[in-house]
Length: 412
Image (cartoon, rainbow, N blue to C red; front, side):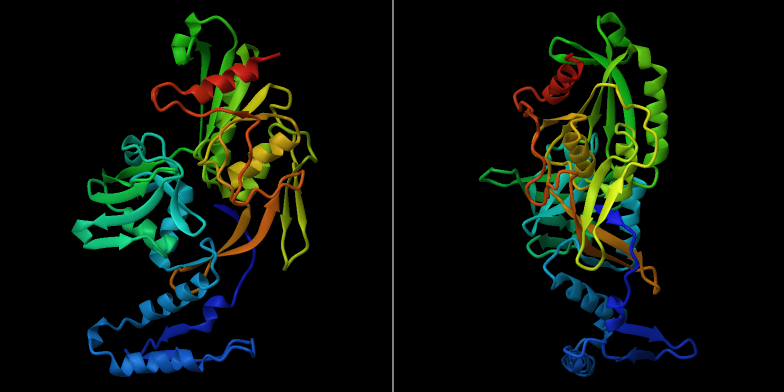
């Protein structure tokens, strides 16, 4: 997801619960919202009837009722990226950006309100089982937790919680490959998912292979720096600097850089701006933010890049979303790099994120859309590659896209 920081308040105040520190009785704040067109009397009428008449009194959990009401309020807006996060889910959301959590290794999103795999994480259980970017998730089953959920209208927070769990436990998913007619089912054993933001490997092309590491010394020609960017999180800048330093140390040996954002679901928007500055002159437009509540903003590079002239291509696929699309789109519009691979995901909207004052809950709100420097809005259509390349299912061990990217970046 793409994030940017804004101060947004008041939505959670429509319904609030406070505990009296000297008593076990809960007090309810029934204040009306400022909007005079909203009458909360029906809400409180239902609340009172449930409290008074519901048969199973031991099931009444006031805090969960409040969280459910707020979640329903955000869901009613019809935007799956605008969501309320109770404390546990808010912690999970932050773990995503930290890059360490327990699960099966998939990034979730929506395509036209259907829960979808934005990207499987390389080397993790889901990818090993054949789960692909663009797969629709139809059902989630965890027999140990007595969970069996169809995903129609399922909140993404709940989906994340159902799929994640302790290392060694199992979850079963029913999925449908994009453009397929029959679903398939996989049972996955959860693992500790640790995802580095940035990695770089050096190699050369040899026939239909991209030869990496020490083996590349036996192949003639310039080295390719395969720079993999898997997310824009809290540790990305630090890991990026280390990888760029490795490239600079081999500068005389390198013929080009393949910036690989395949299966990169995004993250902090500012991260895309910071990283684009590595390849573009200071002052270059990276992204434009369009909002109905605030003046439009244009984000430009504000530092001296270290790889301004080295040949560059960007490798992307259906799993490249939001912040990775901002980065790729800016490099394409400035004609700094060709895009190679398949159409990207198409998430052209921006969410603010805020920790609420009570109990560690959080709120994500779609507050703007973003455009590339040439005013292209990619939402629900994605970026179009300059050089389309599909992976060959008959050659699952051959990365045709990477080979093609390496060939293109070495062309004079």
